[in-house]
Image (cartoon, rainbow, N blue to C red):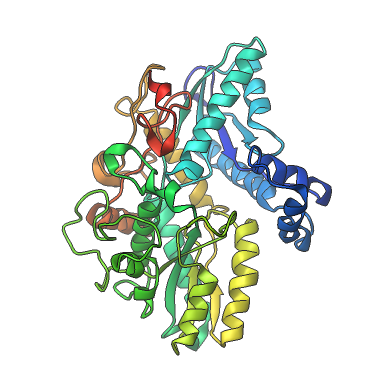
Length: 438
């Protein structure tokens, strides 16, 4: 078996979740640390976990992805050990990185289980890396160099997998799928957090613009191509275009990272019906809207009872926000309105998703993409490097190649996040401390 690099490893970095009922509140205390939220409130929030048995499915799902990863690495004859670490629950990333250091690993590639930019999707994972490096140093060990793999919102494998799942979901509706409409949903964030998402050079709102970009690409790669939902104007992009206070860029959804050369805006065949979910915190703080359940109820109130194919574009696996907010609450909203409803499967547990992670690793270790020293502030932007038209493995399915062609044609938002040792992509990126670059 060949060796990829001397003493090199992959760290699979995720959010974490409780494994049993008595871990739910301590887990939520970790998640909300520093916010002063009373225990009674956390117990109320934890009801979603308790209703589902007091156990988050995320850890088992992550272990399945790691199993698939190890199988893919063996298939490519790559000798790359895979480690698992979490932010909010065992195994904690600090403990995992200490184990990695004691195992003599010198260079660690990190895959974070978020496709997105923004503080929650990217900045906090960079903080996790910096905190873990400090823990290793404080323990008297030699810390390895940490190289974060880039975001992947427009990776062809990600787009193709979601598009195939959209078509499978539509087919499951039978005759009711003929005139069904596609709606996208992702985790909402406070408007102010989205406004500061991404490097300053991008102009803000990187998170919501990546979600919009990915949704458009999945729609165009599926049987819904050029068929935006008839209620799209009442979704996020339509309300944004009317300058309603729903968050996002003030210049409208057609103006994202770069010019696609075609009109991607509201009312065009490339429009998408995009919503948000899972907001929390004070009701007085504005978050990205509309909420998916409110949106379903508004459709019904307007007399729109077409079937709904709901794509959870913001999630890679079926964890608590999918199982509760969509499979329970959104399903109930659709049932109450008499609307045929099906939720699209997430792609994370598929072999193709594991292959995508290995592709990201192989791309980053190529000489042209390597970050060679700890002072580098370089980032990898897929749109700026070959328009995502090559797979590191040299093998791509027909659907993935079609998705790659769509990305090259329509993709308007870059991927960032490829940095060393937890440094932000740029000074002040995603609201991070500029002093990190001093």
